[in-house]
Length: 126
Image (tube, helix red, strand yellow):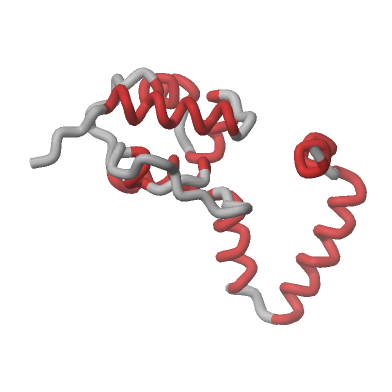
């Protein structure tokens, strides 16, 4: 049986969360946990982490579960990893027919002009 170092997993989660510019509350919202639960993971106090929960952390943080578990030295990152939220949007978009897709694209264009995330643009241009 493989020994799991929950403190190391927590340190890796915290490291990647900070690199992503997220606080615990923001990370919690993206993966469907409370802020207190994220804190427990980061401090190695969750010793019954499910595979599904580790997948959610890995997806949101842009790393592999193997890296979170300490089975890989360096995290495998893509140039622009999709967050859990972005993957969810893509999955839902693919279920729409052509008219539904056109409607969503038009709606997003309007939303972007009104609600554009300036911090994202600043990070991208940095």
